[in-house]
Amino acid sequence: MAEQKVIFTGVEPASKVFVRSVKGSFRNFKTAMLLLAYSVYFLLPWLRWDRISGPDQAVLFDLDARLFYIFGLVMHPQDVVWLTGFLIIAAYLLFFITGVLGRVWCGYFCFHTLWLDTYMFIERLVQGERPARVRLSKQGWGLEKIAKLSLTFFLYLLVAFVTGFTFVLYWGNAPEMFKGFFHGELDSAAYITTLILTASTFMLAGFAREQLCKAVCPYARFQAAMFDRDTLIIAYDEKRGEADNGRAKPSKENKTRQQRQQNRIGDCVDCGFCVQVCPTGIDIRNGIQNECISCGLCIDACNQIMSNLGWPKGLIRYTSEREVSMGIRPKYFKPKNIGYALAFFGGSFWLAWNMAHQDPMDMSIRKIRKPMYVQLSDGRFQNSYELKVNNKTQNSVDLGLVVEGLKQAEVDLGRLKRLTLKPEQTLTVLVRIKHEAISHSNGQQPFEFVLVPKNIVFDPIRDSALFYTPKY
Image 1 (cartoon, rainbow, N blue to C red):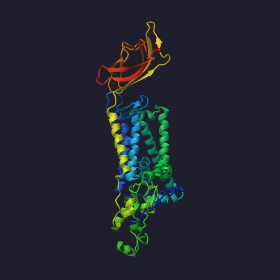
Image 2: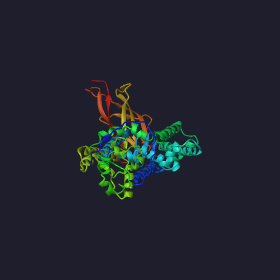
Image 3: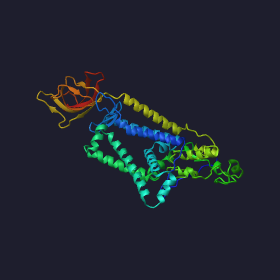
Image 4: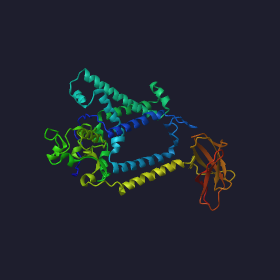
């Protein structure tokens, strides 16, 4: 097989791409991923989840309470490290997949690809198959063209609106927000967010289309740094398709495969089907191109033509540069890919362990420094601290507060007789510690605040602090 050439065409003047439909295994997989993604995105806000405390929505991002509910997991503001860890893990997964399987993310899972697929389905539903859409675009303005384009744009807007509105439902109780939205009862942020997402979805999927992948998305540009000779790509078998005398349409002299081989003509019948089904409008026969999103639709198209002719499939297929040029199977287990995999699994294990072993409560101490200390009439010194306690459990918790490291210190909670936190409650308390100065002190005496649970069982929560006195 001849070595494939890599072509980076840059940004060319945009021309509308009329994509033809195709049947095949890769098209079926793309459709399955689209239905799965849509089912998760559009139905998840309506899924209920029973909790002892908190909303009964399975996934809800409650900004007022500063809590994120994701099924059985509750994320607090101090758990933002989980989000950081998740993003790092996702990046390593993307690097690993790209290094092994190429741009399959773009072809099957990218949000823009999914919504663009839907908009192309709307076009076919309203305007017909590719020849009908090409004819409609060329004909003059009339009742038929206005009616079909109006219906197309209306359905575009409807999908865009449902997309934006569904996003808003994740930030509140979905049934209540659904009712309040259409009665004008929600905050302006809900309407502004819906408007922005509706407009962006409508413009990007309806008009920018493949130009977003070719000229805007940075992934197409930096993917070359993750590709190597063993990365899976979609490639055209130039040796088989072109032979010595190039490709040619079937004729009386080269209709059968045997005739074409005798005339040294390749198996490619130059039907253009692979170009017509490409969402970005490229010709895969020109070599590997950064506009290719590895969706596999050109493989379905070519295999369909080969099957109709009774010839072997695989003229266009998933392969690697090493296999194309040398006929050697790719090597997936390379140090780079192993490193990505180890980083991914290591990060995933750490994140899962951290979530499973999160503390039921956390505490933070802030020393009030004005004044640093106060001397009382009995000779003792008083330090003030701001104690912030966060209950992460689904139960009410009674706590006792003691200090360790300061013998015979007095803990003053003011008017509070005891510390009681409701489920998911955060409580801020002013604590005054009264203690005698220790001789030979440098003015700083370390000690610990200890929160001891009284009505449920978990280990005491500790945090260190300093008690300030004059230097002796």
